[in-house]
Image (tube, rainbow, N blue to C red):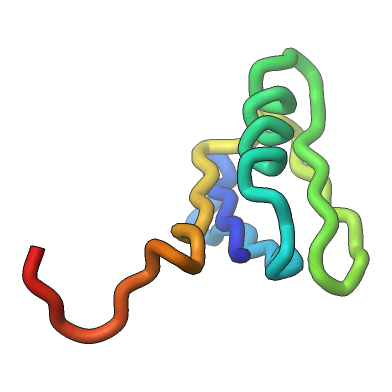
Length: 78
């Protein structure tokens, strides 16, 4: 699962690759918890075991990939 984090006053975004078996609901809860607290840091562990931390006050947005079962490939009619 990929998580993209936009940083305030930066044109680049931080891309963190999480393990494929990461619990999406837990990740969302951790992100929400970190961003709701003042002076906190959003910590994530990527698939290589590295810890990535971003001060919550510097986060502009967080984007998670869609779950694997919701990804569509090719052309489809809805």
